[in-house]
Image (cartoon, rainbow, N blue to C red; front, side):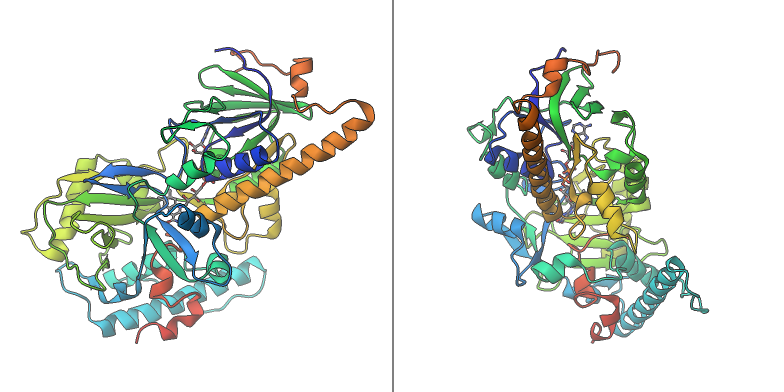
Length: 496
Ligand SMILES: Cc1cc2nc3c(=O)[nH]c(=O)nc-3n(C[C@H](O)[C@H](O)[C@H](O)COP(=O)(O)OP(=O)(O)OC[C@H]3O[C@@H](n4cnc5c(N)ncnc54)[C@H](O)[C@@H]3O)c2cc1C
């Protein structure tokens, strides 16, 4: 496909981090940039789809961290563009736990199970912490969840990432509230509004040739002098710098090769980070058969298999009359379901719903099963750092290997895993690159005129030929509110 004109910066990936980095560069005079996006759209893990007559969010759905002292920048953006959102109140989910015979578990039993699960989780954390610090451990091993209700609660505690040693920065910084995006234009509308500031648009579409869709980057050939990027279709792009905004799951995969290979400290940091798979399955019904009054939006199914269609939500608050249910799976269950047909998944989900609501409920007429794990441009849903990840781990994953700069939610120490983490990381990386460019300019002034045009363009020495050619559900969910705003230690306040 040949080479294109060298530019100053290539941004790989058009998710929120890539777009926010590009915006910072463009606003600071770096206009000769190119954005290479593997898929046919911008947005990455922010993705809406029309389903059952409404717009559903396959990826990020909530703006988490609202109502605190500091404003969440994504909440501010959403308000600016008038994105339709509504407050998610999970606090009643604890009264809506169904057993396999469709009975709601009595609150006393639920309370006892909660307390047991929380105590056990605290103990487990302490043991892990002690082990990691090389201290002698507590002798009594934590209790293992056994009954369906214990397993359901354990799933919500751990897979919803409650098991944190430290308070969660998103909530301490930005506030405890969460708002679900329910807008026909989708969460992704925020990205289009950002892109509009620096890319040409027409009729609500980006028409700027600097945004190149369907360009799957397969190789980065780099030196201090610049970088040559080769895409799957054989196109070659050259630049002085590259910003790599792909997910940590993609970095852990073999999709992109680096020549020379990335240094060991960088690959070690990349491999240390866990990737969570989080799957929202949407089901459309001809009519409602689930309770819809106040406090019913979220409900839990207790089964002897941990994480088996445990966490449910109806969409009547978001889209009244839509007759849509959403069930969330994670990790092993997500991967299992991704590997089977949608018909098999529908059969399983209907079995669970018939356990809860009786044999006479109608079959779903449509099902939507996102496959974040098998998507080679994602390889999972979001990063999850191990307990006691160090500042150095974050510094390493974020640090540039000049001329390659790294960005994305996984590079944000305080807000990794979130949309605002991605957004803020893009801004950070954009600014770090601007600083580098200024320094470079300063040092070059002494010897030769600064060129925003890539040095590669002058030497051509690196041009390639074609043949050369990675705990749980997150905080935007209900666990925190179920377990009273925060840490495991506050569990006594939960079940009243
Ligand atoms: C199911 C799910 C639910 C979530 N829920 C929430 C939520 O409610 N609230 C919240 O705050 N966050 C949520 N998140 C997390 C949030 O979506 C992400 O943290 C954020 O969108 C990540 O943005 P990013 O720019 O770092 O990465 P991405 O959005 O992944 O952007 C990276 C881009 O790089 C592209 N790419 C990959 N490989 C290549 C390649 N080789 N060449 C070119 N391009 C490439 C990808 O196609 C993608 O567009 C959720 C995520 C998922 C998946």
